[in-house]
Length: 239
Image (cartoon, rainbow, N blue to C red; front, side):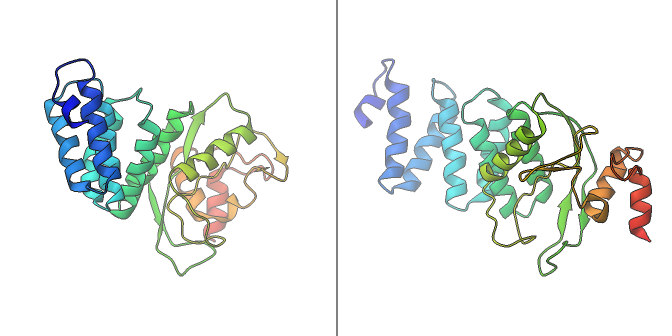
């Protein structure tokens, strides 16, 4: 690809990008990074978005998370329709997690949901709480959001689970450490129980990390089975 990359024909942009990728395959990662950075500095060609994503992804793979985030943050904002955007959001979430930025990790999850057609209408404040169930792990950072979607409840749950997988979630132990945890709490006033999904969420009234953010955006929301508002459930839990 080196000779083709030096040419001025229509294939030169493709050749420059493929040369950079090939350097990575050959294990010459530092040369790959320099080649991708040069493509980005030139700021032209049909493979600028490819090169930008590949550079960010490479930094994350090399555990250079701060550099990866610095590349991927503007990428997801600029290349809204790029086929790499979902993957970039996943890589960005991993970078934020390793940088200890749990808030931005949650924001990456929201952006991934929006990428899949789930409209986020409102997001609560972020609340740090002690771990639930298994206590020998770091604090949680929690939020709730209100969304609009054409998906039925089970399809929406599957979208949440797919988003967790895209962000690299691994379930090591029940209630244990995880980089992201997305739950479906309520779906309008739907009450249902299947092997896959129970609505409302069966334990939400006992979890302060659910009720605190819910109280922030929907204090008068009524639980369809308990017939209590979020405010009332939070007050009872605090007792």
